[in-house]
Image (tube, helix red, strand yellow):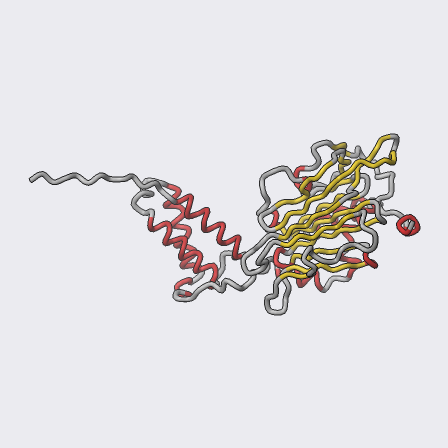
Length: 329
């Protein structure tokens, strides 16, 4: 009796899928390599995924590197002691707690120092370098203001934007900041300028344990009265973990300025309203959030598609902050 030969199906090596899934889960939980329940459980899941592909990945150098590194971390962080425990799905993992505490105890004038440096443009070069580098390891700053000036995350060279329409300032898995730019009817140095005359949208996207559903904050320059202090659903905060909010909106300066503080992302979006004419935006983003950026064109990272750079020591001639008498008119 002839024995039938079973048909063999070739199973692909899934090492890349396992690694991508592991990386994604670490980001979603806000977990860093450490001797913790959350990290060790995710690492165990990663090892299980790799072991399932053991036979089909034997010839892949990438597989051996991945499983060696995973096993080393398992031993290094003594993950065996956490076996049998589970991740708390409801717990929000805050990024940069140490940095937040440091910022929370800073005086207001110290907190605003970097932002004010953008707006006045009068500080000496040495002082400017000190301010720019002081918190470099913690966060990056971007500002767009006036008619229409931009300082990007990775450069201190000011740019003059010559674009109109709706554009993302910053876009990531957890946060989108978008502005709508119009052309001014007033002439500056003989040409028309651009400014944020319509709206700034801050879209806070879901993140497990921190933000259950998407929330949208809108600021419109043409609205009479103070700047908006709530999301579209009427609330001004999101989430709670051990008496700490994930996100909170605070309004300052008699309704001229609103801060959307994303505690869980160690990030702040600050919006100022100048009369009923235009808005300015300042973003202080954690380096970890920048690592989660989407790939398409974003003004704070790539600059404006049409722009002019200021040459040499040229300063901004037109004031970016109007006098209070002008605002009240």
